[in-house]
Image 1 (cartoon, rainbow, N blue to C red):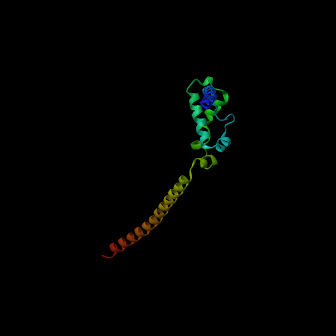
Image 2 (tube, rainbow, N blue to C red; image 1 turned 90 degrees about the horizontal axis):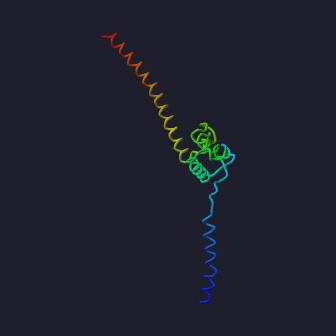
Image 3 (cartoon, rainbow, N blue to C red; image 1 turned 180 degrees about the horizontal axis):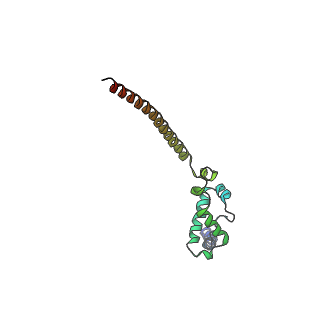
Length: 144
């Protein structure tokens, strides 16, 4: 019984202290003061998603209440030259593609190139056949 009283006397204030500290916890977003294409590409996906979610939440209120660096970061995330707005052959555009997407793009490009090559070969063959048919038609008309 003495042990349970001692443990209760020890744990109850500890639990109260933990509850008090956990209720005053404040969310702190990741650092994004100097957000640009090079720093954005170096961040991992979870950090990017957290920054985007935080800025979406901040933009629900009045923009005049946002800090200057938050406004710049929101503008960069929305209109920056990364992802779909990146130059097509730049590193920023390639970073957005997964391995499977790169493989599928290669296969699609190969099939498309093969189709164009086969079409060009068939066009050449059709021209030869057309010339031969015209020559046969002229020979048939000349020899009744």
